[in-house]
Image (cartoon, rainbow, N blue to C red; front, side, top):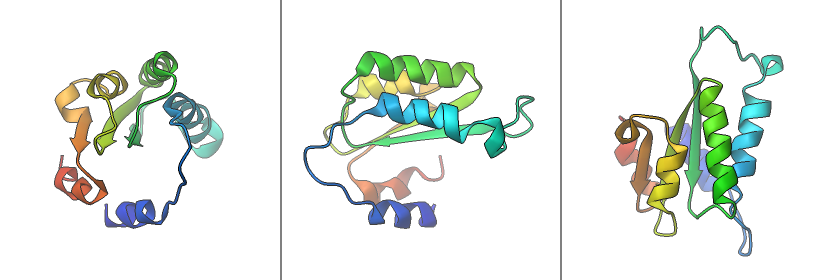
Length: 118
């Protein structure tokens, strides 16, 4: 978790970018969890997708669709909203069930430590 937090702190972005969560989930589903990257169909190894967002998706319908496709393909989807610009209903739609285990909202990036044990 400490390594992930360090990596997140190094990520920089400017203003004016739109949140395209649907595209991120689709890329994760098609590229990260692909057989050529070691993904297995027989569920030997759990597939865990973690969506960290500090904004609302510009394409909510596509975001929900991509998350449902990912879950159907056996990916356990965590949805973590960071800050005050996220939308609980969207996070709820992204997260696998049970929602209380897969959906989290924190005030800022430093607060990610508070959910790491979950």
